[in-house]
Length: 372
Image 1 (cartoon, rainbow, N blue to C red):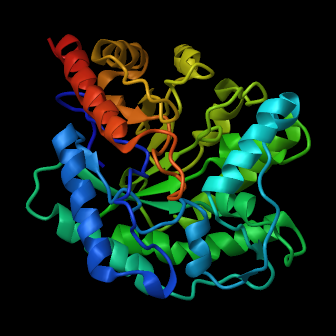
Image 2: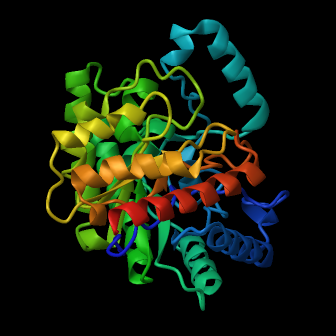
């Protein structure tokens, strides 16, 4: 994984605006159309000034539910996720539930049988599309995201295994196939782990904050087991508190979870750092020392609003982190994806690309200060 050795490098969380009308599931999936979409999204990232690029998750209906096409053991329909915010602010919550039902049109099937990895052809196609799309381009790095065992368990309730720990262990063993394939292709593996933060606000994992910390420790252990054959420097990890524009008043503080998160093997941690609920948490790193070999990818642009951040604001955000953890240990990132669900996106596609361009300009300004 390329680090910011000469300037602040830019990247993002994963999902980017997909071409309108792109079919992502079942027999309607068109291989050539999908390959063209990946080429387009790679070119758009480079044009916006993104250094470490990916496929925009173009083939995935969402960052977590895509696995039901690749794994056995899922069926029926589980319960939709309901953040605590919905109950704390009922009128807003009802509006959000109605809007989600109208736009997402996705189901969350439950785990109803043994989990195993049944179809490696889909990740193989993703890898080939991304390698072809980036061939010949001068980029600092290429990554591909994959759902973590824990986030799959959040979206797809366990109705088969004797315990959630047993379920997550089975998911870790199954998803190892995908993780290893991404690494073997020479791509940086990004593990999407929103459950390490969102799991408290959205699912109430553990029942209490103490129980939640114990639960995420077990989820980190599952990640470490599943990635045991991949070097830490070939991986990064993303966590967030749920990629939705809302109160977030029940989010667990970064300070409370960062100790457990830093025990995960991936060498870089991506997290929200731009939205009004979490921007202040840059100060956590005044007290928390990064372990040797770890880097951070703080969000310096918000992925849930159509404001385009001023590059000078981006530079200020990056400068704060760099002066606490070292300039070489910071990459510029986004709070989350711009299209975590393909059927709904809060940020207009044209605005999303403008935000990424602002991030690149902000990183350039920060670099001028940090490498005088």
